[in-house]
Amino acid sequence: MGTKEKIRILQGDLTEQSVDAVVNAANNDLQLGGGVAGAIRRKGGMVIQDECDQIGTIPVGEAAITGAGALKARHVIHAASMSLGRPTTEENLRLSTRNSLLRAREKGLRSIAFPAVGTGIAGFPVQRCAEVMLEEVVAHLQGATSLESVRFVLYDASAYQVFRDVYEALPE
Image 1 (tube, rainbow, N blue to C red):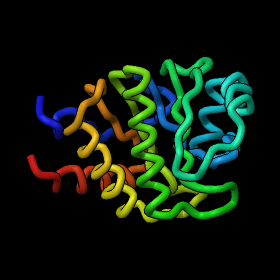
Image 2: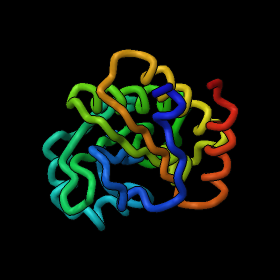
Image 3: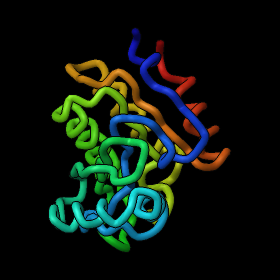
Image 4: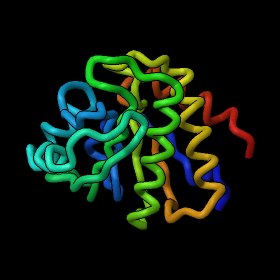
């Protein structure tokens, strides 16, 4: 199976994905407030926030892994692309995506689902987000990895279309 064939772009609810891990668009304090993080907390339960509290603050650009509580996924990987109340930068998006993929590899996970990290509360442009995240996923899948399936699950139609267009432009 080629690299591009391992990637799927979907419109839907990230919290409903049956995968080894869903990725949370996190702040580095790992506080599950609004947006994707809030949806994960509401559906997965406070046990996820409790695990985040045990981990504590992580550097911006890093990623941490917890259980997934009541979610269909087995784990949540918290991609810290920003500090609380601050915007996401391209460098931090790139690093947090890369580190999320590394956490998945370290755990031997086979499937992962990402949102458009940093495009909600943190205000990062969707087009550039799609380009950066897909670049990182393609680079990761071309190396040694346990991942067989990477999904991008976009809640709204416009973000879905942007990610779809960037995906379609990837080389075969």
